Image (cartoon, rainbow, N blue to C red; front, side, top):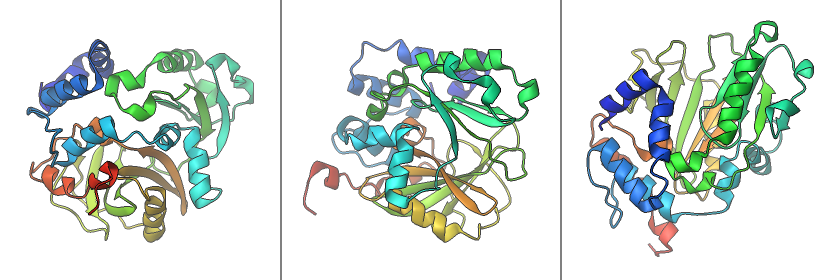
Length: 303
């Protein structure tokens, strides 16, 4: 089941079909599950005894690096306190409310525009651009489904296991475009090595991958590349500093940010990019990037 077949299944049945398949493997141990999915997604055996590549090391970290702080950081509610502790106030998207269920939300009190998401998974967000025409019935159905979802069982990413499912309602941010540009900084023990900028101005996300000096890198991951170079933000060095402060002491962390009218917002902290199943092109970049993750520090081995 290579990436082409995965994408075809998602187009035909929706991404929930893949999630259901993963959850059907509930009886497997974390290691057995990860070995199987890696073989299906990457087309090769997973080397956990002596991992070398970026994707292998992410799988090793899933199984071995269980720092309790990671649960707080992966939780979209808890993450806010972590960011404030390291950076101070004002670096997260303004919060309207946190709710245990959809029925707790005072719909009449919501502003004309907002964003709704759940705390314990990935991708379950709904954007309301006009409350007058917003389908609250469909939103409730989507949020209820997300609250029931055990994201840990679909990824075996340990940090999601004990997050209490909540609904967050955040302020709607806009930079004047169809969707916000997503700046994803890839950091290794507090050092930003590269980033990719994701633009979702169409139904197909596009990306450009850059080094820490904002120069284009000669590889791509899952999404299509854009042809043109994006404009370098005037506060790029500040964004890089934020990513490095948040990732200090962590073998790998992806720090996602938005830039709205000159202000930087931290959107999400991710420990396992795309679950660690990333098709690189050219493939040798998997091993090149793997050298950036130092597992000896996790193992307690002196260098």
